[in-house]
Length: 305
Image (tube, rainbow, N blue to C red; front, top):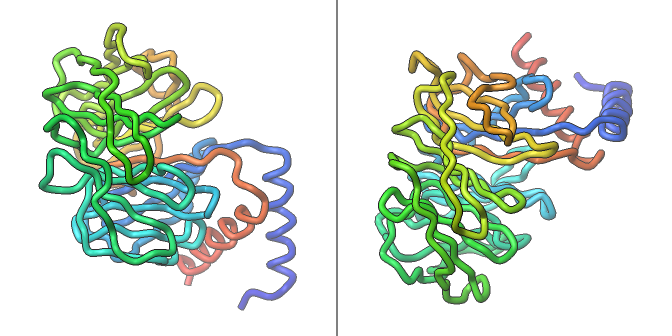
């Protein structure tokens, strides 16, 4: 059994780590295992998984303000505790893609529909029909948001940029960015001034300006046979996920926005099976790190049992 000594030592370690180190905590949705996997982005250490009630999870979004994660899957939309994985709310509406509009407010692409978004509210039951999109585009797994701008990806239209009047408001098309020979598009991640869109069937990343316009820069990744999920982290780093080059396992790669087409590090071989989306947190607060460290240690203890 865990005694107070173990908890105090763990707390001291977590507080010291959070005070002197900055790192990325990476979450990967995996429809092959019906789980959300966690990795330390700096070391690649596997921190366990949230199993939950998910069936084919398609999208994840992190609301760090409320310590929540929003998950879309074939069997519903779910709000879980970011650190423990405890299920907080579930609704019977399948979805693709996920993004945080504001703390406690989440948007997702509605399966089977081509022109509207669904929404979920932390602490409330039910889901609602959110903003109607002005164009009949095919919303994919990639939905991301920053500075009142909504990015959606579709092979036919490229990356389309929308503004939302409010969480319940109408959407206005601002610009469309054509892509170079797009295939099956996956997640779109928004950085400072630019965006990345994963392309699963052609195994490449599309680089476009977040404000629209400009030339699509394509970066292939030989370490992957498919590339479906991508998210930005700190220090000019991003994480992408898909299947490995031999298509025998899932794989998470750490790379740089210098777009060299090479991976700085690779993680998750033999753990990931069929990733669908990626979400990252940089430098969690000390209290949250205590909870995360305890979860990881308990996981290792169960494995030794």
